[in-house]
Image (cartoon, one colour):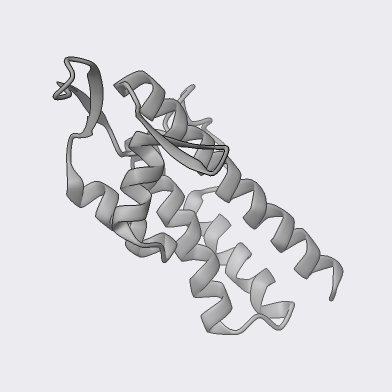
Length: 149
C-alpha cells in the first residue's frame, strides 16, 4: 500500500512512516482531492499541484557521485540522469537548468559570472535546499488559494 511507497522516497521515508490505523495514504489522497474540488479547483490546477509534489519527491531521489574535474578537484556528477529528468518534467523546468542548479554555484561579481562546480555533499545540500524552496513556495500559494475561497 501507500506506506511502502512513502518509504521508497528519500523525503518521505526518513524517520519511519507513522502507522495511523484510522488514516491511510489512499484515504488521505481522496480527502485532499475532494477538498481541492470543493474549493472550485479545476482538474488542471489539481494536476499541477500534484505534479509539483511528485517533482519534489523525485528531486529527493537524485543522487550524486564523485568525479574529478580537469583541474583535479572533486566535483559532483548526477548518478542517474533519468531521475533528474523525471523531476524536471514533473516540475515543468528545463533539464539542463535543473542539472546546473544542482551541481554548480553561480556567483556574479562586478558583472562577471563565476561558476563553481559543487562536491557531491554540496550538491546534495543544493538539492535539498531547492526542494525545500519549491515546497515552501507551493505551500504559501496553496494557503493563499484557500484563503481566497
